[in-house]
Length: 311
Image 1 (cartoon, one colour):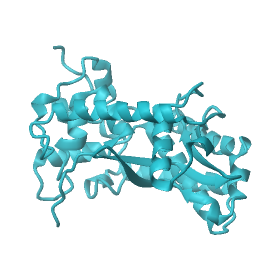
Image 2 (image 1 turned 135 degrees about the vertical axis):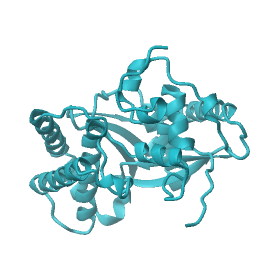
Image 3 (image 1 turned 45 degrees about the vertical axis):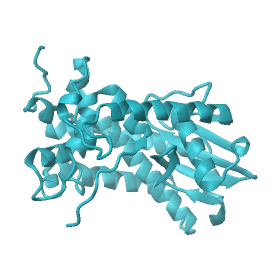
């Protein structure tokens, strides 16, 4: 297997993780490196396995995202897919991945097979919990249609589409910045960037940094005019959306935030040029309540109790 270089980059999720817990950040971006290799270091393999773990809330969101992507990709090819089709597709994913996790199929291939936090850390999951998660997924799909997005996106001509869940990057200074826009298309002379949410995210009076990042990406990679770009946070769980026009001043402020975040990240590195880090430079978060929900608990404390020892 070819060797890959761990090159420094930035993303919205990476910046958020750095601010949340430095130790978790280290495990995710440094401790897990080469953990996909069968001959990789044992601790790296552990961190890589833990990196793939997903809890119930994030799993529901991932199922919704993939189901919407599946439907949209079908519409782009002229395939008819309605809410019932999407329910069936989502149910299939839920059932298959539940079985993968419960049977520990991820032991054979951590990246390929689902590993649920609740299974790995021996949390009790009742039939009611599973039913509630399934109903949340279905509610998000129903709201996708009730809010008008189903009919709107299904009617778009193929040439209107720009991107659906595609990982891509642009540059801020000399730093590569990664972004995955859930849904991007052109309509009526404007560019629309949609960010699907399934959690507690509420409509904001001003665009979030994530939406500003998407608008900056669209400007840099696709040449989109900011004044003709609409970025929307769409909370499918709540059935609410907020659309914004990102300004040049907001993009400038965002670029400065990225610069400051990158500087803080690199200040922790043992060798910034080589992007080499030491675990000791990344202490655990002081808020131990975060530890009880952290997929890296086993790497951090050496067991799966989810009860952090008192300092």
